[in-house]
Amino acid sequence: MKLKITPILRSCCEEDRPVTVLGPWLGEFGWELVYWQGFVRKYRLTHPEEYLVVIGRVGNSRLYELADEYWEIHIEDLESDMYLPRGSLDRKGLYQLVRILKEQELLGDYLGVPDRLHERGWLEFGNPQFNQIFCRLKPTSSMSRFVRDKISGHRTALLFPRLRRIAPEKNWTPEKWSELAVLLRERGFLVVVGGGIGSEPELQAPVVKCWDFSVSSTCWMDFQLALVEISSLIISGESGTGFLPGLCEKPGIVFGDPREKKRYEETENIFQSRVKYITTRDPEPRQILSMVETI
Image (cartoon, helix red, strand yellow):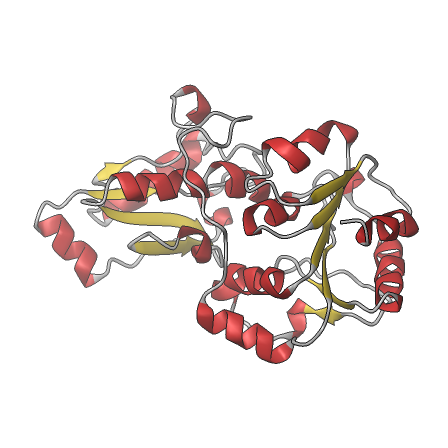
């Protein structure tokens, strides 16, 4: 992993201005949305005198709009478990990161994500309002214009299919996603499929796929937020994208394990958006369609 030290950052070090490095967050995307990006924002606002560097995944810089610098890394460079749900950086990965920072004479006031972060009083899982500051997530104005130029004048439904090897029981079949897309089109929706890089589903339905746009991977989160912004409705399985309606003040339908209902509808619905949760991981497409007009 190669991290570039910018001239302004080097000058901060030379002038003894406090430099804080936060991250990287290694856990799942949903935990990052609900329990990390708000913590980073509060840290920034309560420590304005410090020069703040955030380290994170490629494409997620838009979540950390107040950072002075965002260093993009490929998590596999740390040889750590990227699927730890709460973002713990194991000791091997932590030592690797610290070694890299020391080699570049940039250790400074390193905070990072240590083991048992929630036991150190920084975060309180189950209570996202603890020690965090949230704002409605939105794209940059330039990305917003880009997407509106491509997709405008339509009633848009944004689908986030979950197709992962981790916990495959949470996945819905491409056939059912395709059936839902057809039903939504019959109701007059333009159907757009969003998601992460490398997760494109094979849907046999006429949809607009986000992967068909020429968007750099470094702007990917900004792009997804622009798709959310122009959408009338967001539909997601039990995944991190299911928290986007609550963070972007958009109506949404999420389906999954009955035990997760309160999280998506209440506890981690940050701005109390209109989110309806279907308590099964394998609903029928028409069951979802029946909720569309009521939300």
